[in-house]
Image (cartoon, rainbow, N blue to C red; front, top):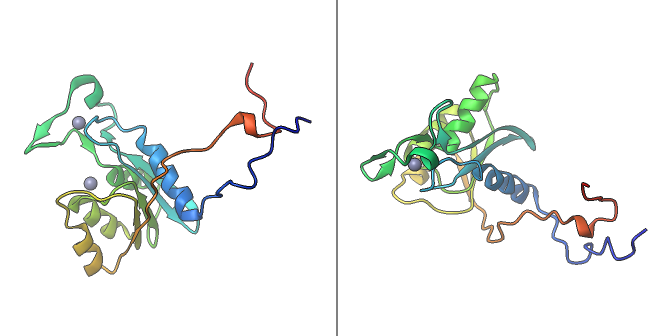
Length: 170
Ligand SMILES: [Zn+2]
Ligand SMILES: [Zn+2]
């Protein structure tokens, strides 16, 4: 056994459940198709991932990265937002979102906030803000809990060199 490996124990920060699901949302955001914004959303109930989404074009349509953004009133309208896409994914798979928690990389826009509320989401966790949104007002009026989770370290730790049981692909 390589005794140089397995030294991560002391300083390693094992993510909380909230951090874990927020990191999944950040990972989902990497699939975004619009260069103006990368956003991810993970819908969870009882620590079980129900659906994920990122801001992306509707299925079968071209991506902003390939054909440019479609700007209306200074916003790109080509994509569905991450929250809408997560709700749509759940819908296509017949998954009930009642009582679920949404982990979103940023504060939802007004439209997505209303959709999350209408879908039955009862708690929203965010790690950054968003401009011009009435989300907080709608959440308050609908008794949806809003949690701000600062997550400055947007890093996924997976270092093969540190794990004694890991072997690189040949
Ligand atoms: Zn775009
Ligand atoms: Zn939105």
